[in-house]
Image 1 (cartoon, rainbow, N blue to C red):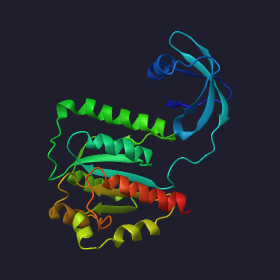
Image 2: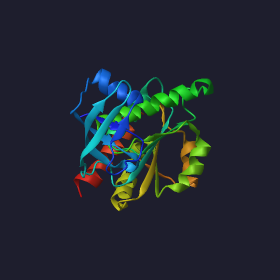
Image 3: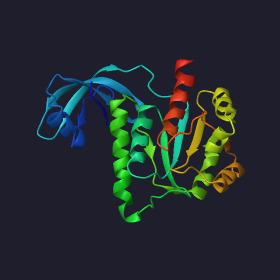
Length: 250
């Protein structure tokens, strides 16, 4: 069934309304009709199988059929910070990272970022990223839409990093040196409910200067196996490993 994030509270015992873009998608794209069922996700992540009771020219009234109890979110909070890559690679990271359970995405201007952030196009760009995250969350049946931030500077990223329980920075030199234990040791020591920020470089990777600065801010550099991964592959590798560790092994 199709899933919709309604961004509203549910009032017990009352029908709820759907309009705007979701109304258009349900009636014009999905061609849903009275009696059809769908998943509705309310504020706070509560979700339920719901049924269309009536359809007007610009509004749907629906009721709750059954509340959803299955766990859909990772038991830890994962934030992916990516140095701005070329083309649509960040869109790929947001889409697939959402499917794999990321909680937040923070793009940042890295020393080796070829793409330069255009403030004139910033609003539309971020809105597109948010739309990609929303659609991916609906497709993968999540209960929350990941937050997507406007790009930070590297210094700003370091400043906000103190709010996380664990901080890693993926550095290809660690892989070349076969020093790959930091990632495995960190995720094996994490407990449910903890948060982690993981930083990835753009094409060309992070500079030694950036890694040193991150270490001064409490980050632990880590390798991700013996192979060097692309900028858009590394975050997905990490999220897959975290899913295995916290969802399949426990």
